[in-house]
Length: 423
Image (cartoon, rainbow, N blue to C red):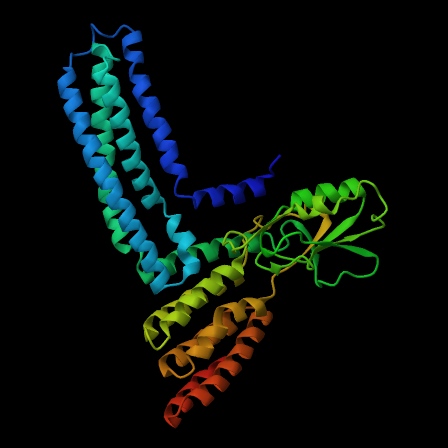
């Protein structure tokens, strides 16, 4: 049975599949045609106004031909937007763009309307409906037309902005912020805290059976397995870590190797491993995606420092959000007392967010100065750990700028900006 946390993760993965919503709308469309038949069975022929079959057929024929064209146009526009997001931003942002609700709803509405018109047209031409059923189909067709028109207007506005870099940054910021919030409210995923990844004495490592990235950890399953064996487990691979068949996912503490009930695959089954990283439970991936967008904008072929500066501001907002105090009662209680999970390290988050920008933007004075101002802001608003990380990365960024810049005035301007974060 899926735990609530695993169910949330599975639903998030389903949301990224383009075929799910269109399939659901197709089923509803076919069902709507047969529901209209109930008007005949309910004996409403003498109550409802009469509609000629020819008028209904004409309306359905117009819908069938137009919806097929619009659906084809929608798919082409979506593919172009996805390609634009990948080229202008980063390929890692594609799942976020695909999961756009307005776009998926639009494609679902167009395909669903096409299926509805085809099925209804066949039913009408074969005299499946009486007078009441024809009127019901006529009303349903008008409603479908209204839904399609409203959806199309909303979708045109969205598709015009879907592949733009600014929109991609917004989606990546939202995904990273949601993942950071989940770790803010549950720093150890509801388990006990551990400060080291070392197995320790008397522990049994459980290795990964596949090669890939950890996407999700079902702590509820680990707790159940640990209770069954009366042992404790320490997680060694957080979401986002790349594991191989010789890499331990966790360590089991206790004399369990000789027990018949000990099944390493049961513990390993709590880890969802895939060839790609996922945003939901991996805050570092969201920060890395934003960093890649900025880094790509700094390449000589694109030369767009403004986008990099925009991303730096986004990262400052995210780290400020990470450091902000939690509301009373929002912190998740420790419910898994047999599982130990390490907390995120702020220095790792800074590495993912700022290292690439500082390296490839070292020769641009405007980017380097904005980066130093960002470190200054984070050092002042954050706690001791964030301040230490900000000052460390500030020193590294200054050293890179000194090597990359040829004009002494530019170097001095970066040093002056760095004096604030060093104070």
